[in-house]
Amino acid sequence: MVTVIKVLNNNVVIASHPEHDEAVLIGKGLGFGKKPGDEIAGEHAEKFFVLRDAEEQEQYKSLLAYVDESFIALMNEEIERLETTFQSSLNEHIHVGLTDHLYFAVKRLQQGHGIKNPFLRETELAYPQEYQAAVELAERFNKALGIRIPEGEIGFISLHIHSALTNRDLAQINRHTQLISELVERIENAFSLSIDREDLNYLRLVRHLNHAIERVEQENYAENQDPLLKVLQAEYPVCYNLSWKLMKIMQQRLQKKVPDAEAVYLTLHIQRLVSGEQTRT
Image 1 (cartoon, rainbow, N blue to C red):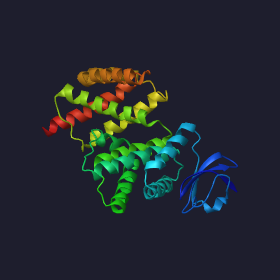
Image 2 (image 1 turned 90 degrees about the vertical axis):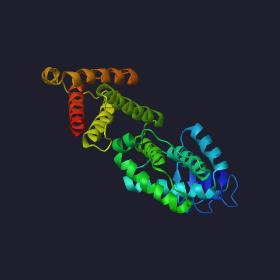
Image 3 (image 1 turned 60 degrees about the vertical axis):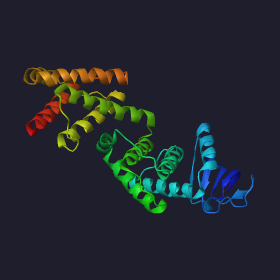
């Protein structure tokens, strides 16, 4: 048995849980007629989650004050579906972050405002599974609410999903996506070209940059590649010099050392990408 602390709406209550201190319980009609101190049989709750951080608890409580109950129910279904899709528990903050984000995104769309996302392609390439899950979520929202969630918004949903799956801060993930976009722009400016975002070599570059940033953040450095560095310096001097400039940018943004071996991989990716683009033109 759990004891009601606060009824948030007819379907959601904050309760005292024997194992988790405070928990958010969700179930159809669960809070109807309940008062603080009343007991609820745990099996009557369709789902429960724990917001351990006091600030997050307050954010969720205030969120329920302005978000429709039907929208909360829809979001809870989608979050449960995401956990089934990825066969993994999501960081509970997604109940606050994604619900709040999507609620206001839907309101903007209903008022006729567009949504721009300059990092959409980089997000799709860096997190393909999360992006596909976001596409499917958007399709269900379209049917349920009679709207059309645009591609740009799907990119933002993907980042929320990735953040909840990896327990990484959303702001940090956004910074990494922006960093990748900046590095690609530096390559385009250096060679005065516009890279085809559908090109396979571009896909490989973005995925490499994403993994490289994660390795640097985790200080999981690549093996020494000094012999190959000298070969590439002689064979592809322009790409080689550019790779070092990109590494300096990464180092400044991440405030962590980028290993010399990264110059090998970056040089090869840049050379493949640029030679392919120049062949097409």
